[in-house]
Amino acid sequence: MLSAREGKDGTQVIVAPVTTQPPRAGDAVVEMPAAVRAHLGLGDARCWIVASEVNSFLWPGPDLRPVRRTGDLSPYYGKVPGNLLRKVRELYRRAGPRITPRST
Image 1 (cartoon, one colour):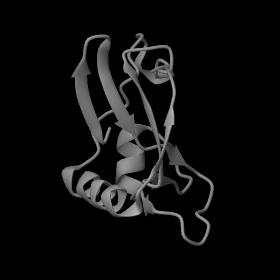
Image 2 (image 1 turned 180 degrees about the horizontal axis):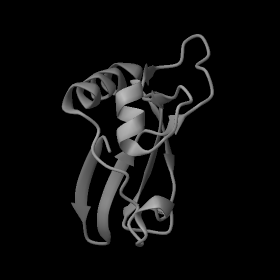
Image 3 (image 1 turned 60 degrees about the vertical axis):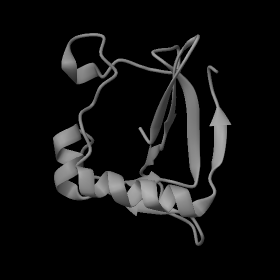
């Protein structure tokens, strides 16, 4: 989550997606370290956090899916370490990202 703002209809969040697709030239991405992938339960495949194409939606809302490994209905995978989140946020600010509205 890159930002959250309270509104009359709920909390509007901006989140950066994670992908296993290798970045293309010019993509604003940060590779997720193996230790962070393991901590979040994302497996062994390399993945990247995309700072140039983010999503905006209400939290909680229909765009959230439960994490299957938790045994409950939580959409929460876990925390991204502060230093990694700072890198993504800085790249986000510089990239001038395309924001895709979801359930806004």
